[in-house]
Length: 235
Image (cartoon, rainbow, N blue to C red):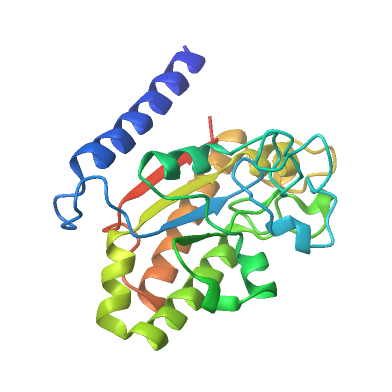
């Protein structure tokens, strides 16, 4: 029964995404099938190379990772080819977007074209999740990076043009697995001593909502009016 509920939830999320791609976002005035940029938040399932720049055990900059991507050289993606976020971007005409830390190392925001990937292997909703892999970029820090990007866009394009771009962009958010595998289910987990499974799940949901709200009111308009696809691993 548990697996069936999880499966139906994933199908529902894919249906929501498909409807946004085909019909667009009515309230946001998005032209069907046209998104100027894509912003990705998550963990190793969608990390496209941010962890290449971190002192972490969660790395994918070695073969056979990347053997079916482009020239066949590792990009930092934790897979042989493209990630699910890459494929979703291609479905709406957006080429794979660069990892944020790679962008900083090269041209900075001068290299901004079609979006940014903030995802980081071993990252979680809670800052402490993934601690056993050392460095990673948790959700709170990814949102902080996005706030910096927004501020830079406003400085370069002006508030109205920047907000128009952000409002018409596609957002992909994927978190949850590391909050269990690399936190709650670890033998040395402090969280497991403090929270029941039900209480811990509630903590994750509450923390996620609070982080979005804090970022929302402190730095920029709500993420929620923007076209948003969320894939949760909290099953």
